Length: 295
Image (cartoon, rainbow, N blue to C red; front, side, top):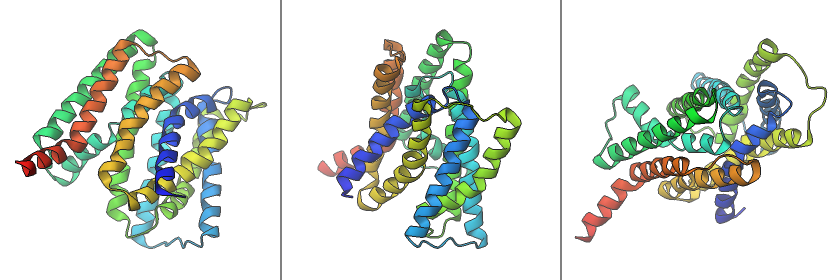
């Protein structure tokens, strides 16, 4: 697949994933939806590693990477799927868009790396202001919306922390291998969670829910992840970061027109602040250096 087509495909997958998560739990329950997705995803990922003849190393550091990947996926996705019952799908994409800023904060807290320039600090403050607007809107939506927003934020923090730890323990292991092995660690947690929380197999799965589960297992858990790392090898990090600026906007409008989700001026204002903060955080230093070079 060409790099431009891969880039567009990742944007489409990331745009549609939050809405597919919401649809997949319709009539099935959120625990069954996430568990079945990840079990199918694990099978598909392992099949791909076999077809591509990718070895799965089992030395100490590799196992730690798989554990962080698997347990991080399990806990993070459980929070997201629960929240999707109460929070519009576009909001999930917006809050996850804050992951680069949250990752930077965690790196500072865990490793003491102080890389917060003025532009990044402005980005952080703008992101927090936008998040506050989304919180205030949640109070008027439904009783569980604010709790759902908190759950998505917790999921984003777990996802960001997991990414840091995987990078710390990964010694050149292909991303698809880490995904496949990580899902192996995650599957028992999903099975146990389903048994303890729900334990019911739906008698009938609606077509939209079933197709959403399969879509997320194939595209969300395997193809999207593989393509993301593929374009990361061929495109600069700054251009890859543009994806996080595009997908929240497209996800908001997709939720509005396909799922009749609210899209008020307050939500748009919060979204603009979050995206402006992310742009300042990701590209503020780059613009400053270019301006300095032009003088």
